[in-house]
Each structure stands twice: as C-alpha cells, then as structure tokens.
Length: 117
Image 1 (cartoon, rainbow, N blue to C red):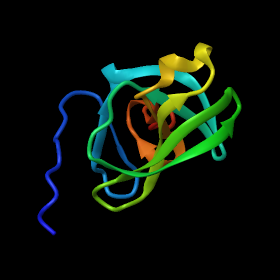
Image 2 (cartoon, one colour):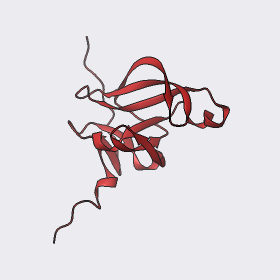
Image 3 (tube, rainbow, N blue to C red):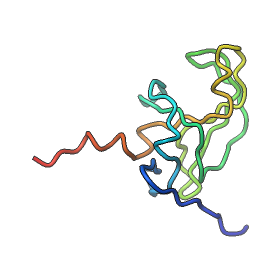
C-alpha cells in the first residue's frame, strides 16, 4: 500500500481531535443544527482527508437515509458520516454532504470554550 496523500487546508479549519489532520474549512460549513449519539454535529459541503466505510441504510431523526461512515486518514478515527441517498424528497439537499461530530473534531467552534482569566 502506498503513502496516503493528505490535503493541507488554509484559513479557519476543522481537524481530527486525535491527530489534528485537516478535515474541512469553516467556509464549507452549511449547518450547525445536526445531532448525533454524542451530541452536536455540523453539516459540511466538502470534507477531505477521509476514507469511506460501507454503505448502510439507517433510520435517522429526519427519516431513512443511505449513509457511509467517514474516517480520518491520519489515525482511522470515525469522525462522522456522509449522506449518499436521502429517501425523502425533502431531505435531498443532504446528498453528497458530510456530518462531522463536534466531540471528534476541533476547530473554530472551540474558540469560545477556553478563556484566559
């Protein structure tokens, strides 16, 4: 197996919490209103430096979706999922988009959590 090519992003970025591999840019953020088993999650239009798991049909809060889990190529951690097919026509906007779980990433959303008093 060859060496994994990783994309280095510029600007405000979101990275894997475990290994700091770049995953996406703040400008690719579409929504902050998603939920996962571990709390809050964000929807992004583009995510890099990931590998894709097998397709699965899952019943989610917003209905039936075909999704793939996504994993950081740096450390192999599961960082979220990608929507492949939305079975409800009102959810089609999610197709091809990725959700990253906030507990598994670090980025601009962390800036308000730490204060130097």
